[in-house]
Image (cartoon, rainbow, N blue to C red):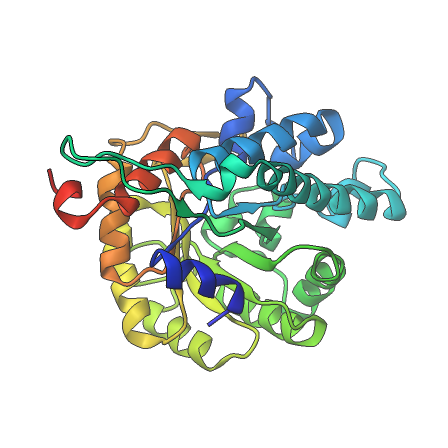
Length: 334
């Protein structure tokens, strides 16, 4: 179990991740129809990225994830950004997340969970809050392609090319001040194996691996979930394993399958539903928005240690998850 999760699991029984960074940036008025997607704002308005991280911390998140999902050396080079400047941009993404967390933590009021009244009774004594984490987002090769291939993994390149692509950014982020690496939205078992080998070579910092899934039984590339989970259980570079940017309705059976196949913490943070349009960089209409407070309790009940949200999940949804997860069982059912 990654040591940076321990304090949260011991004190409250779960880790609450943040929601979609791009979702919050779009809510603030930013147009993300760009090959860099949310990383575009790193160049144009870094204060907006800082504000988005801060909103999730005030919403109750135990962990914020950097704006590096689609920030790559190759993607920035295509815009004419020199290598040294591109590296500085990625370091700035870490600095913004760390700054948001540290400013938040400086305020004494943010170091406790405020007391609440249950059923009209006396206020519950405030409890200590654990210092939030900063995770460095490492998106898949498909994020750089910006063609939606993070939802199928048919890249047309082999393991060596994937290793050459991921190595520089992973080393840079692993050497920064982040607490944990978030290898996320991975559609391909091949890509996951490449990333895990790089993590083992680069750092002693923990890394979670989360995958996109085509259904309740398979990753986006068709690999059975049980096969991937058994591999994760035996792989030193994988500290926690799970699913993200997959419709919430699919999560309970996926989480149960993962929890049955590995002793490592299970991580689950879905999107809000709908299909991703890689041309317009927008989401199609979702069938129905979940009751985030109710569904996140089901994920924890199914075996998830860390939960949160991805695209189309905002600070208010994370706040609803915090309220539901912190409530006594009888209160959450009413």
